[in-house]
Image 1 (spheres, protein in one colour):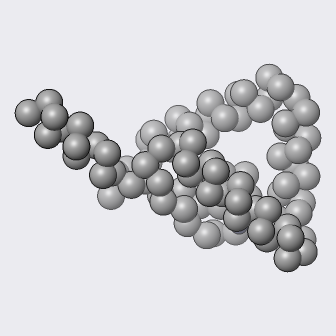
Image 2 (tube, protein in one colour):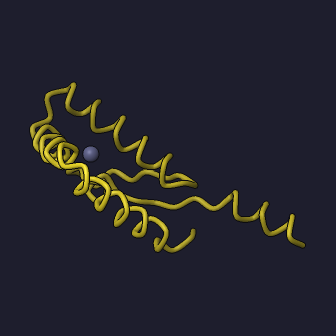
Image 3 (cartoon, helix red, strand yellow):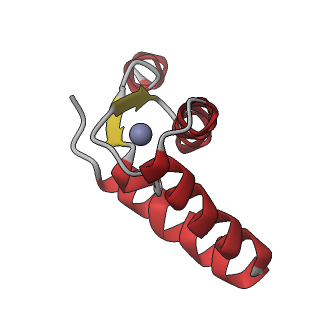
Length: 90
Ligand SMILES: [Zn+2]
C-alpha cells in the first residue's frame, strides 16, 4: 500500500501561473515539484525577455532586485513553495 501511495503522489501535477511565479502573464505551468515549476517559469521569462516583452522585462528586473537581497530571495522562494504546496491537486 505504501508503494502504491508513493506511485500516486509522483503523478500529481500542480499548476501555477507565470504571474504567481513572479512573472507578468497568465501562462500556466504544470509540474510535480516546485523546483521544476520554478525552472519552467524562469525559462519562459527569459524567452519572453528575449522577445523584448516589456512586461516580462520589468518583472525580471524586480526579480533581479530580489535576488540581490539574499534574505529577501529566500523568503520569496519559501512563500512560493508554500503556495505551490497549497495548490489543489488536479
Ligand atoms: Zn509570462
